[in-house]
Length: 113
Image (cartoon, rainbow, N blue to C red; front, top):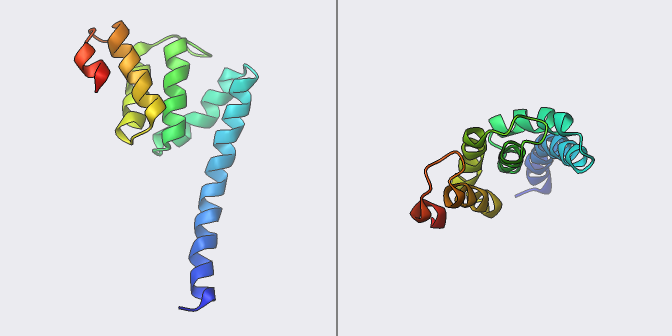
């Protein structure tokens, strides 16, 4: 296969992924500086589009009440979406909610899963 036939798809994927990474990074920078409103604004569209990192990050915002009212149900929603995609930190966050009984009935079996 010719190099030019490989280059086009690779460049297309890079161009599609780069804006999402930039938005996630902008949210991460904002979160690091305590600007949770900006982090939320950057991450929500990404999370709704299935970005696992943004989903877990929204889970953390809602779990801790950073820039949003603390809402364990919303934290669980976002942690579940990311956990279902295999993100370990989201699986931990979800397990912690079940272990502590925050927003859900305490369930040690679900906490271990």
